[in-house]
Length: 210
Image (cartoon, rainbow, N blue to C red; front, side):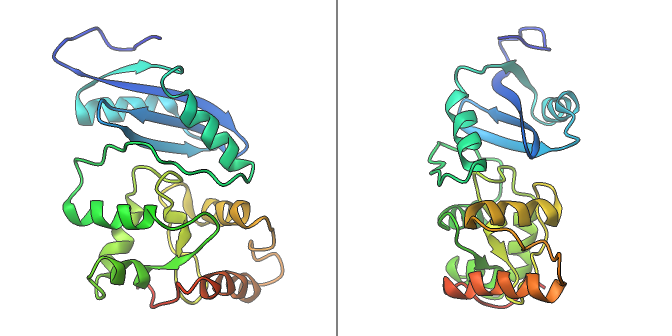
């Protein structure tokens, strides 16, 4: 283990690990309460990301591959197409009650399934809140672990994605469904048709986030 901060007993410890995958570099962090963030991307700057976290939360960041080994192994398995149950304790305590409810609902969506923004809003008892649902998912601090990529628009368009935009969202859906061809190589209409088929086959159709 090592840390970029001087030891300070007044600071809470934040454990982290970074590693490379076919989707780019990953950074995982874990507070004393649970897994607290997932960041990834081809151009991810780990030092800059950690500096941002430290400034926002006043923590002592310590690299710890041992305590986060299971999460790293699960992410690698997931990216190879293996269904993984990311059943860890999570730290989303700083979020609003509405945001926590949205994220816990999305966390229940099974591997390979898709749901609409409207479905999520109805599940949390706020059927008119599709836009706030979309805004919450755009700020999801734990993409993949909380699978916001499984929430799309009912017309087959993907909507936004906190983990790297629509191209990354499409890639994760492809991984889970064991297929390619969602990237609109032939036409945008065909890509949307395939997404809509996956959505409707699971009974998760509904109105867009808007």
